[in-house]
Length: 99
Image 1 (spheres, rainbow, N blue to C red):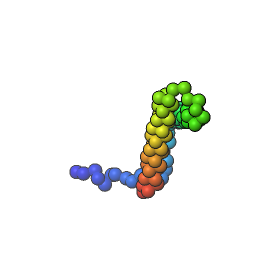
Image 2 (image 1 turned 180 degrees about the vertical axis):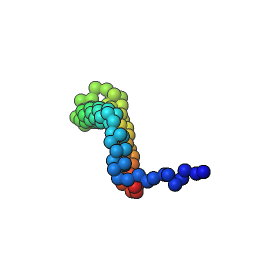
Image 3 (image 1 turned 30 degrees about the vertical axis):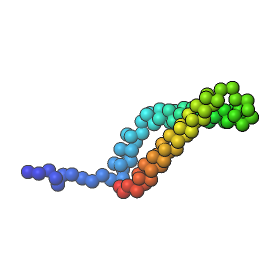
Image 4 (image 1 turned 90 degrees about the vertical axis):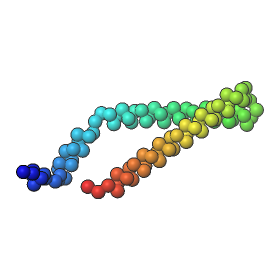
């Protein structure tokens, strides 16, 4: 005999219980990691600004180091923007999901 008739659907209350189980302290760790990554990107942007200002005013001591600082800041900004885009796409996809 098959037990297919005994399967019941999930109600709203069941879904809310499952949602509360999914909220773990790992989310807080993710937020801390994200904040530290954004802080690092901000520091790289500030270093880039100093390097660009030094180049513009002719006060650059090492052009190679200035170019590296600019490249690092640009690459990290592109990476951050791609991560943001992926997160927004995932959020939109979740919004389109029907329960």
